[in-house]
View 1 (cartoon, rainbow, N blue to C red):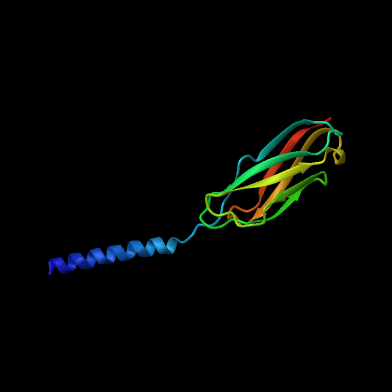
View 2 (cartoon, rainbow, N blue to C red):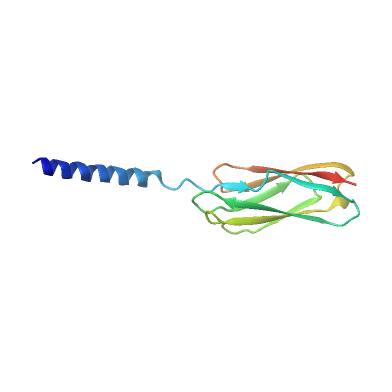
Length: 131
């Protein structure tokens, strides 16, 4: 009788542990940036376009999709892959700055990254000086 109760107790504990693991489910995608501030240094206004690459990764457990990227200046454009970034994979955004469209002096602009990440919108600040 004791052995039957012990076996039933063990089966019940295993079933509850399995149910608990299944109930947790996936936690979602997570966008992690290499940096939230990108320093571009000093750039000549007539020196041509300046390109910076921003590496990001999906540290979550479901696929990540970048849905939109907005900038605070017409002098900056962003190119990114419109595909799923699987968990533990990386992606790259290419930021192109056209200094001829920016005023001289201190340059501080913000870009917003919209994605399927559970943490919501990420912001990246681009800083430098246009000479």
